[in-house]
Length: 317
Image (cartoon, rainbow, N blue to C red; front, side, top):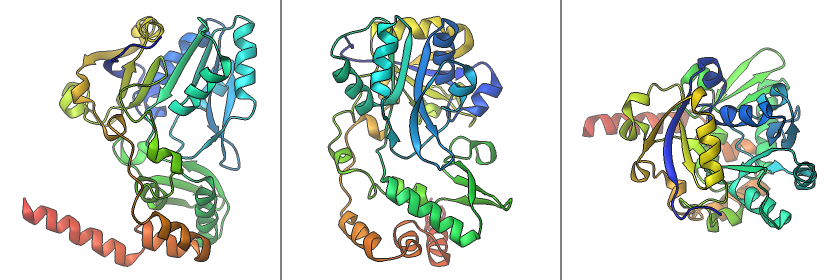
């Protein structure tokens, strides 16, 4: 049974290499290490060689490490729920991670409480269209005349934790930095319709623990703010409190105020953009270059507009 209001923490993994390999502060690694060390299994999202997001089962660190990092696309669950139930019935400790709707779906499927199940959900901005993602990759491959072999949705290593810039590595060795898909994603026009009515865009979540980037850390705990990544951790249940307490030896942590942690997805669903119908009409009739320029802020004219906006903000200060 989840609490009526979560306890809130800022968390950083003590191991700098672990934090560097994570997109925020490394809390997922700390939690999953605890489960794996007790002979348990971890379920989470990875990217395939074809850059589809799928859930897999991991009983070792190597497979678990594939779950690190951001994937701003819809994850395919397949038979994951069936596999989770089999592990639970075999008395294995199970950590299931996913979006709040995936956690809620798992609990509905199971139909009863399991003391050996830990659910970790993420603060989700929304789930974008897989079709747009595929068309974006195809456009980049065509533009750079090379197959894409690696994707980093948020290049923390080169640009820092706060930057939201995707990096694509091509087969010919070329590295491509872009913000086109990021811009489309945060414009909300490519999200699933159900995301505009999401019941989990609040502080109440179905997971035992909810994790996210700690946006606003400079106010909540400025001593934690080094642009290397800090995890926001919402503890929603007694199970969540027990597991967090068990990993405190491997993390730096500080309890913070909920009001200092209220990023947009913790308040309400994002409204459907007024240009969404136009975007999808254009997507079905135009090429992706058109979509990138009109909705993804791609191209010289958009670059000039961004420069003007930046200069205007500076002059107004």
